[in-house]
Length: 116
Image (cartoon, rainbow, N blue to C red; front, top):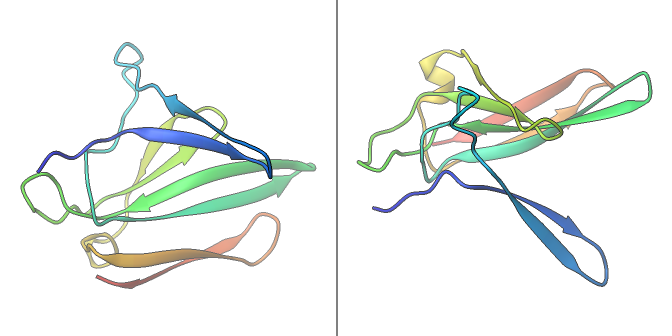
């Protein structure tokens, strides 16, 4: 199966949709998640000193050979830098699951994972 690891950012308004592809830089040595499908993702927003910071979290999925991935990644949507988050396999080793964010306060949130 031909999987991709592309990341696109869309800006939407009532009149237009604009998008840009986030370019993976080989030169920086920055980590980037493996290509995958059947994964889940959710956006997390935190507020500190009246500044909103947004992150995308992805979890699990299948690789190009059909193997279940047991990883979790988070990307800062301002800097486009990925970080791998270490979580137990019982949380990450899944595919075809759902994930959502439940805000508790400006700086704390739950990420709820179900299925898979």
